[in-house]
Length: 170
Image (tube, rainbow, N blue to C red; front, side):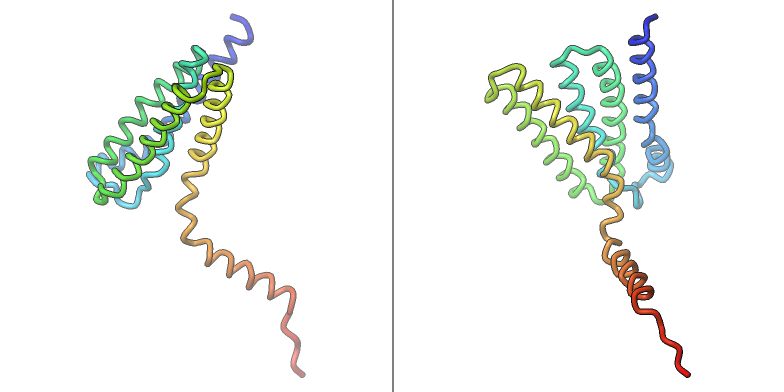
């Protein structure tokens, strides 16, 4: 086995293990039979990212990308289906899923029918998957957005405390 094969196997293993990061939430949803406060966005972004990367792997015909994202796609399909079936707010989750799916279909149609240069298709799809991966990695932090004003005001208070310290009154 050469170094590239070993590296490929290591990448496949680590990436597939990272796709199981949603498993604890998935198991909790199955046990409780409702989603509770579990956000949908990480599952949705994982699904969309895996589909995008799978398309890229098919375009490049890269075994490593195909294997990894096939497993990731299957896992994320289960995550999304279970989430949608137990969600108390099905309309919002289904709307987000529909919008994301339509965006992926639109990207596919654009690349398949508008862009004619195969190298350009490859580079645009590669860029799109990189952006999707970035969004998928940032999506769990979306829960922090509602608390940003409080964090900013606390930081401002902390700054003002040191900038204008209390003066001793004699």
